[in-house]
Image (tube, rainbow, N blue to C red; front, side, top):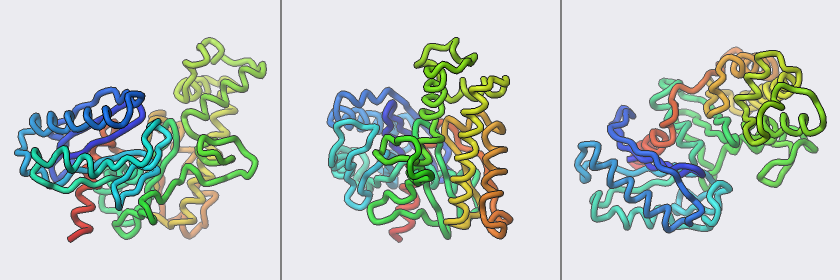
Length: 321
């Protein structure tokens, strides 16, 4: 079973060994209600998706939980995710293990960073099948990443390795929600793309985007306006793909992967993003490494949170053998 805890939604599902979902459910997270209430909803969802899957509860080998960091995967504690206000040192694995004990028969519960879980999902079931060395980058509200080397996720000391979105690319660049400056996330996340467009409009630049209410401007609107030739949107988009391409080039130099997979909502624009990012990344990477790598769009869609949690649970079971 896979459980996914996000800032805006909770998702749960049951999948077979091939990663195909047998059941799924998605509900609003309503994180303002606090961790206790959210966990109760998650447990109830878990029970419902198992019942709907046709799989006997005793046949659920393990439960994976995908959640934004920081967290400690070894102790199962959610530390203080920026997208989950009030979640401070929550012993999530212990709580879920107790709450599912009478239902699932004591199968293990594993906690995983959401970007790492997504990387595992693409590695097992998506664009990275059969690839031993890859980097997954999710570009959405923020930017996260997961690294798989020699078919194994790179976890770091507490399970928070590969915070790729917080590589500092410019020492005095844009401020980042993490408190630093010049992070990749501060240049290329969907949130920042929209914010930069808004800031330029507020400074008096002309743009077709002024037809939107400020809060209605998203990275998708910026991309569409850039495609239509809007000068402001073109400038914002060109800066985005340039910085993102440079970041991916650095990632290639760091990890020498066979594949870099880009996922997340911002990648929905397809070639408008991936083509220039791939070109710039390969120009910036060492030629020998550039010759060995490709940069592609993720194959798994909106259910990657659930499938990632399932993949993480399967991987942990294998690691423990």
